[in-house]
Length: 142
Length: 142
DNA sequence: CTATATGTTTGTATTATACAACCATTTTTC
DNA sequence: GAAAAATGGTTGTATAATACAAACATATAG
Image 1 (cartoon, chains in turn red, cyan, purple, orange):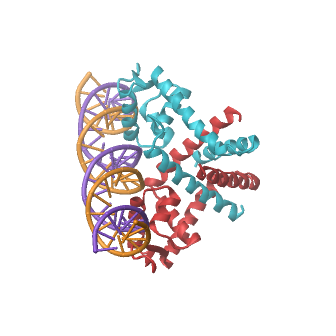
Image 2: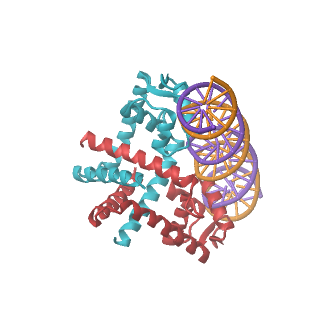
Image 3: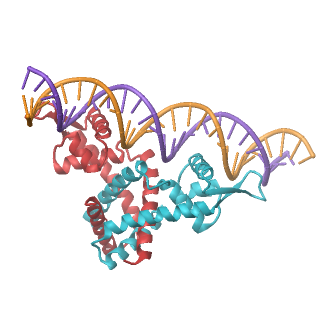
């Protein structure tokens, strides 16, 4: 593989992450930081899940996710369902309020993306989305 | 613009950032976290610069960069040159040790990228790099 | 039944960040 | 040219996200 191509990817990823983390960890979008947003996404699209599974999904420590989900519960975005087969375990299910919050947040994020991609062609955007997704999938297997 | 394409980009960016921040903010690559790495990159490729300029480049608070550069200086990766025209200002210049550390770190990062892109074609990788760069450039103008 | 494993929470420490206050110079203004 | 305002930078303080370790409650294995 051409070294130069790799260097570009490596550098641009670092820049992307540097910029977007500084934007959204402090000046977060509305009520949801990225963690919360992705947790809600995960629960909405893959159904109720426990803390452990969610932590695995995002490669975070269980304790971290435990606190994040506690915060989501406290805000009324998710609620706990005790696991009928295991007295220790819970599942986190989305609430209507949670869905609403997620959707609003998503729109805010999409709006931002639209601004950035203003001058891009449909085709370029499509390819970019596809490759990002592929990159994430390739990365997770390692 | 096709809504679905935007949704993919938005989601995959969020995932990418979530994953890579959790990896590299704690389990950082060698001696350099992403901030330090990018600061060194910036100084190496764009020449000596002051704290204010660097902060602007990464959209970070000046105080944050002041501490980060102080850490780099303390490790011997950069040194200060007083600005001859302005008694308040400094430039940060790279040292040999700083270059060495940067280069080693870059190799570690490239290795990681190579692993992820193992199954990608040269063409795909090239396009991905190009679009990432374009995305970063588009984003900065907003 | 006791010991060990497991899902989750809680205690504690670290780190990256922002904001505000400050310091030392430089520039502007009168 | 002296006082006032602006500027480059550092330091004090607060917050948030995270990890790791300890604790807790329940489940499973011997």
